[in-house]
Each structure stands twice: as structure tokens, then as C-alpha cells.
Length: 457
Ligand code: ADP
Ligand code: ASP
Ligand code: MG
Image (cartoon, rainbow, N blue to C red; front, side, top):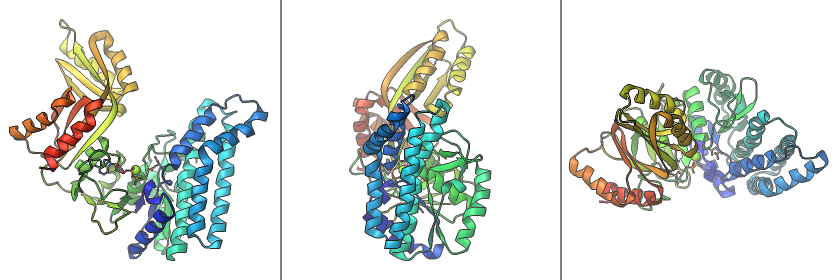
């Protein structure tokens, strides 16, 4: 059972999580929890502010650290304290207070260390600071489960289970080591009748350095741990009634999608739907573990089931990714076709992690990526081709297995996008979707219009 930041944003939300976990007691749950909402943002901001302390004279460091704490951290600590004061027994509160004080001291020390640390240490320092978001929320939730529901919950430091490489800020899990650790550290707790509560998003390298999996990474932690423990189901409890036909922040009329295949959900997450971290599905595949996305504020709603089999045909959801740049590459008229393809393949291979779209033919190529990666691809191919770079682009993707391909439906969708200045359409590359590159300024309207066409008529 994974609970996101909004599901533990205040005392009322923590209490709700307690009631939900209690309903699962007989099924031997493992609980994975994110930092309280906004806490990761402010901890990240504190580390960024501390980077500026490099070469600060020693006598000025304590005052600078106090300033950073006041600007970025004190409110977050106070929110934890308030939850503890509202929900915990006096002994629970005293115990959690000690955890909180230790965290405050360690974070202050880490902030001060930035002043003297080499640049190569900054990633480790930032990850260690940020990890306290999940370390605190998981410690607190274990106390809440015990004190409000009488559940046998125990805090387990995620860094003992989730083993990663040492790529700070965006670490990759070591699945084999993690499985071993989950078997030796976590599963025995479950077998002994305890409910382990683990922070999402954080891990540690084999040498013990604290790492993080990338923003929004708790979903990924949940499926990594769920797969390693051979869970019968992974539940992601969030602030929407499941996966919806569109982001409800963009389309008020968005409706729940009852079922999605792994492929549809993975493509949706990769295409930018924030409801799932892009890598969430991968760990589930080997053992065919279903993923259930549910609303922590409305327990009675059935949510979305994401499953291993083939999906029913048809459009399921529309998603939008903003802040992109497109790079159109045209070969020289007298150039060699094969060399052109080699040039663009080479340039894009180096940026494969950042590519949102990549179309290559002998007649030309089009890439869409974040601004930095796009600029660097453009610079690399410029010598052998002509290049047109356009910023402020967005990618609108419709997800759905074997979508209706009749010409009339296709024409209706294109008409819906009339004003969005469509720069490219990708249709047929994936069996589960089609994408449109549009101007960012028109993207939200494009999503709303497509939604009307596909789901409201
Ligand atoms: P959590 O804190 O639970 O991990 P997130 O904020 O990371 O929650 O993800 C949930 C948010 O994802 C929703 O509030 C919603 O705005 C956004 N979202 C984007 N696309 C979708 C979609 N297709 N269905 C549901 N939510 C979506
Ligand atoms: N707390 C982390 C973040 O805000 C991870 C997560 O919430 O999934 O990015
Ligand atoms: Mg999330």
C-alpha cells in the first residue's frame, strides 16, 4: 500500500490512512509512504540555498544555516509536530519528538557541510537532506498506525532495503540486491505479524550512501518493494479517484478509467501523466502483479485496476507534457541518405533518456526533448544538416490499445486540434497511442477539445 504526499498532508489525512490500512490488516500489508506534501520541495530548496554557502567564512555559517532553516525547513518540521500532537499518545509523541530533533540536527549539520564540501559531494549531501522527508513521514505514520488503530506497525528505514547505484538525485535500483534485502529485512517482519512502514523515493548505494530515485519516485519504490516481496497486489492511494481520462487539473469532466493494461499504464506514465512515476510498471511485469490506483479520500470508490493481460480496444486517457523543444532536421539536398540517418541516430542515442519523441526518415527527422537536451542534439547535427529549433512545445498523447483507426474518427480528432498548431503527429509507432506535438500556449485547450471528442460525446 503506497500513500502519496497529499494522502499524508495533515493530521486528518494521516488518520484516514490509518483507517485504510486497518481494513487490510488480515492481508499482511507493507506500507510505503511519501514525504508530507510540499516537504520534498522545501528540502530540495534548502539544499539549493546551501550550495551558495561555498567558501562562507566559518563564523558566518551558523547564522546562514539558521536563515536557510527559517526560510525552507521550520514550517515543515512544525507540520510534523502538529500531526504528532493531534494523533499520538504522550509516549508516541515523546518518541517521535526525539526522531524529529535528531533530523533537525542532522539537517543543520548537512547544510553547514555544504560550505566546505567539494562539488562532488553536493549530490550526496542534497539526497541525505531530502531523504529526511520520507524518513520522517514513515516514522510518523508507524506511530499513527499504532496509536490510532492499535496496529502492529514498525518503522523500517528504506535505506536498509532499497539498494541503488550512486547516481544521486536519480538513482537506479539494483533489483537483485534489493530483492535479497527485502527478503532478509522486510519479509521476516511481515511473517512475524508486523506491518512495516517504509519511506518511498529513498534508498542507499551498496556502500551505504543515501540516494533518491528522482522526483515522484515513491510509486516506483512501492512496485520495486512489492515485487521483491511477491505481493499479491500493489495499491497506490492518491488524491484522485484512480487514473482518469485526463488530468483533472486540466479537464474538470475527467472520468475514472476502470481498467488499463500494463502497456497502456506504462505509456501513460512515460507520456507525462503525473499520477504514476514513469517507471512504476516495470517491476510488476515478471510476476504479473496487479496495480490498483485508488483515492485515499474516498475509500468506497473502485479506482483503476492495471493488469497484465491485453486491454479492451479504445482510447482510455489523454496526457500532456509541457516545457519541451522540438528539433527538425533536414538533410542537405546533395547529401548521403545513410550518413544522414547515422548522424541523427548517433546524436539522439546520447540523449536517449531525455527524448520524448524521435522520428527518423531519410527525408528528415524530428526530435522532441527538454530544452537542454534538444539544444545539445541540435548542436551535434548542425554540421551535417539544416536544423530548425522551436521552443515552447508540448506533447499531447492519447493512450489506448488498438484505438479506433477509422478515417472519420481520425479526421474528427484533427479538427479538434485545428487551433493548436500541430507540428507533428505520431500514429502507428506504438500500438497503444498517438501523439501530437503542439504549441505550448494551445496545449491545454487541445487536451480539453480532444477530451470532448473522445469522452464527452
Ligand atoms: P501522490 O502525491 O499521491 O503521488 P501526485 O500529485 O504525484 O500524487 O499524482 C496525482 C496527480 O496526478 C493528480 O492530482 C492529478 O493532478 C495528476 N494527474 C495527471 N494525469 C492524471 C490522470 N490521467 N489521472 C489522474 N491524475 C492525473
Ligand atoms: N517525496 C518525493 C517527491 O515529492 C517522492 C514522491 O512523492 O513520490 O518527489
Ligand atoms: Mg506521485
